[in-house]
Image 1 (tube, rainbow, N blue to C red):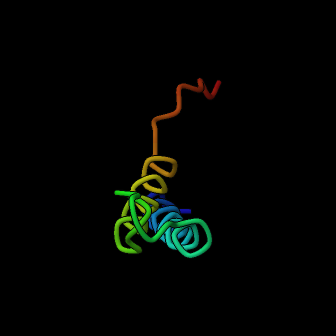
Image 2 (image 1 turned 120 degrees about the horizontal axis):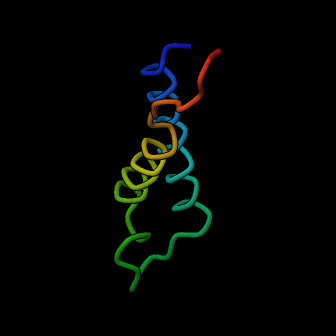
Length: 62
């Protein structure tokens, strides 16, 4: 799978999970991060991007 397609999939899944976190666990007042669905979606997408970011492998293929 292309590394950029994999990254896009991780970002999309992270965004969906961020929104799910807001929907099920977010509070309505007093919480600066989880009180807004848009903030949680962006934060989830950022975490998904970090997790799915392609890194160079250090394996020696010999």
